[in-house]
Length: 342
Ligand code: SF4
Image (cartoon, rainbow, N blue to C red):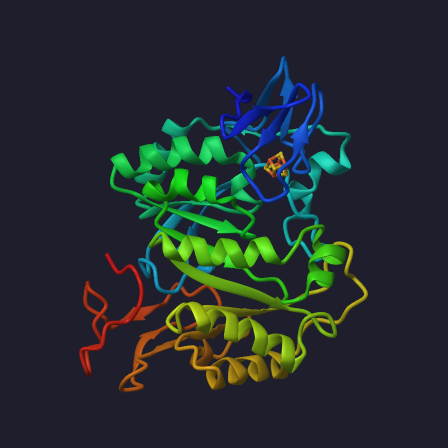
């Protein structure tokens, strides 16, 4: 079960295989591993080493992904494997995301075939399946099989992603993918290269392309003191999002000292509130601050009449009051709030 052909790939010159899942576009010869550590060439074919092999599985409120405009008050069956195509110094899940890199290519996980993922999601009353904790596109073929089956059973599918999917990956999964929370980790190529081992440009391209396919998009940015929190950089990200659609929700979250970035202080609330104000100046309609307690910054306000239409009280967002109807209309003025509400 745990290794199958990674079919999102093609043979290229020099007896190599091109992986078509993410923007790293690894060109691999026999026995070579991709950057992510979970795709490797064996007998001339690219193999996915973590198919049906999860390193983490949990039932989470969908608000925790975070998705605030997507089936509020529902739970989502969340899975992830080991490995990642990024190597962020601040990764919250580095024990699993960097596991193959830090253990000589070893992969671990417990068997959970797609049928089991869907069965457990249904049994536990979840509204969706989330591919999260590490980067989903690296275990693309597993997500594809799960997502297809989940749709057949009436469940929705969510990618929580760093936004490195190729157009081909998005085109292939789009019929089954309902929502994506995409990180924009910074607006600087230097930051992406030095801190994440990746590039900014493909991420921006992925956000634009996924949006153009009609997938529900929300964006997350973790603000890190002195790294990506200048007014200019926050404004650039806000302008980029607004340039696509002002109604795309943007989640600002606080960094806590972690992994290879233990020497940087946690993000103060004042930085998050400053970023919130800048995002509002740039015209974003739905801006949220994560991991601080004040419900004003977790709640959704109607852009037209400014009334509070979804109240989220508490860090876990498990006491959400949704005043919208099933089509997402504001109960006060009838304006349609962007999102997937049923
Ligand atoms: S998914 Fe892995 S193997 Fe494929 S291009 Fe990305 S890093 Fe390389």
